[in-house]
Image 1 (cartoon, one colour):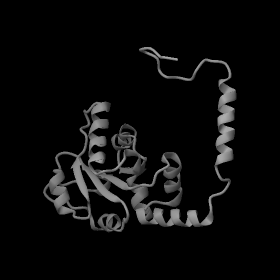
Image 2 (spheres, rainbow, N blue to C red; image 1 turned 180 degrees about the vertical axis):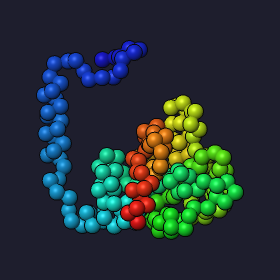
Image 3 (tube, rainbow, N blue to C red; image 1 turned 30 degrees about the vertical axis):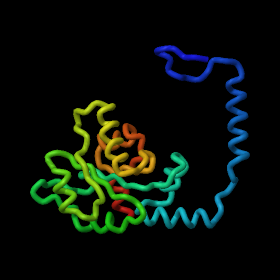
Image 4 (cartoon, helix red, strand yellow; image 1 turned 60 degrees about the vertical axis):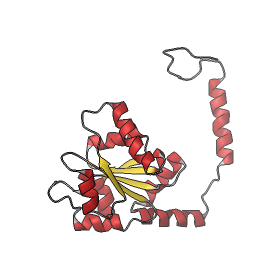
Length: 190
């Protein structure tokens, strides 16, 4: 069936939709194991620890995306980098970020901070770029974030965004990222 302009790609109105959904769920449940093997859980717990996230957060991201987290994208607010003349991550947060292993450590910095200066001052970060502007449209924000993530040779759904404001929470949706985690929660656990 070909859909025309203005169609929202919603559910089909053909008969039997509920039955097909029931059958799909039944087949999916039959294909999925009832319990995750202990060895896999131990590997996931170790991976979550290496990323600095708790296991429930890591498991939720894995379940939602089907992928491992390969990058942590911090906002300058989350890192507490606020002064252009001294763009350093405070030592306690810098130690937590440097302990992350097996993932790229990325940062988006808000104006008036300069992304290159933040990167030079904080070698613990693998890459930095300017954050989307507060006035950017949704599509401009999506393209900006997606371009930065793709430049790191990562898929968007492999990156967990760690931020501190509602605007930064929107980055996760706009970029189709793996998820969003409040900076207070991320840095409190470590």
